[in-house]
Image (cartoon, rainbow, N blue to C red; front, side, top):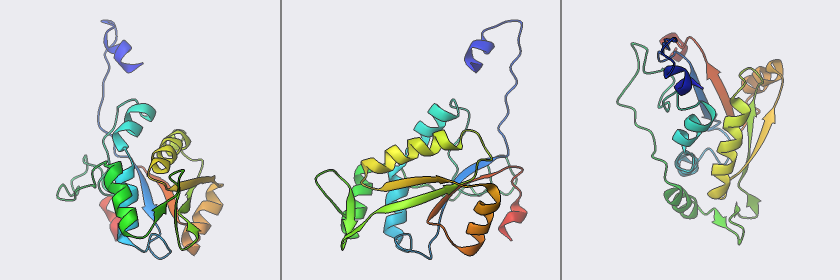
Length: 178
């Protein structure tokens, strides 16, 4: 408990923003993520602050781009979609994804169900993704969490065999954007 340690006069707690980024990536080459309104809806359905507070004990900031704010090349002009579950539902309605009596969404008989791929390389990933899954469900989006070994994760990303993935970058460097 960091706050508890801070109250102990015998302990000095040093804190600094890190260089790591946890992120979600959409495969925009496959349905339904080929539609910007679906991507915006899922962005708006996610309460990043709640995830940061619950999983990371409030010791982080929501990422808006692949470079953390502690790096020289961070682009502060990029803005995130605000957490707005009602706006998320409206985006999905407008895109033809209709909610049933339980709130689950479908379009032309196809459920709005996506697989989130992740590797077991960072401990809090599963907890963060379980919260994200609950938040998405409130907008009618079903997320299946699929943990796979790191070599399989890398192979599937390379092959394009994924809907949505959770990644972690450490020592983020602007060179990754090349």
